[in-house]
Length: 261
Image 1 (cartoon, rainbow, N blue to C red):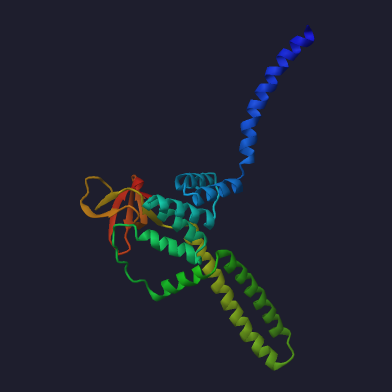
Image 2: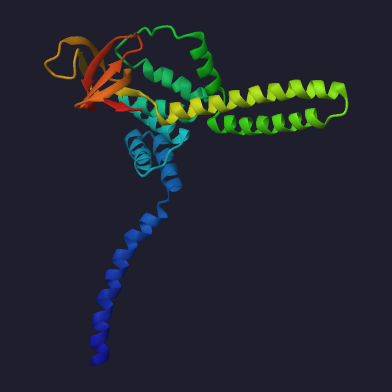
């Protein structure tokens, strides 16, 4: 009788353990890579909502990659979601600034916006810096900075201990060139990191919003912008963001009207 009674107690516990363990095993089996592949399959089948949901769930648990954001943008683009599409492509472009496909996708998405803002012309140095920064990933600029630093050190030692005048001459000029390229690579790396981690831009996520002359609903109307427009956040005060448009216009909008890239 005791044995039967013990069995009666253990059997429900085994069932309960199995029921608890089953969802746990399912969650563990659902690896990020598997979820990413499932989202890709959903996209290929035309189930863009499911694909976007799965890509977004990966983002929410902390995964970041240009491919993930690009695929998320593709899904939102198919769904006609303007702001989420542009946000995803902008984030992908930050992680892979030299990727032509992402740049092309972002350009297509920007055509979905209502506002036609003509940007002010940038200085030549600013355009050149951005172009060079986007030419290579941040990691590549870091590697180049280290390579040129070691090259400069080697050439400097050759200049110090070289026996021939010709060797000293070209090693000295090579040292100066390597030092300059090291400084340039390091500067572009820092610029790229600053763009990535301290990006001041946001995307308008509401259908339309009227910018005010001051951080208050009672402020005068300055201009109106619509979903998908990119703005530069200059400062924040009392749940209001002071923004600057690409054409130089400045105004205040509620913080919840735009999402940071």
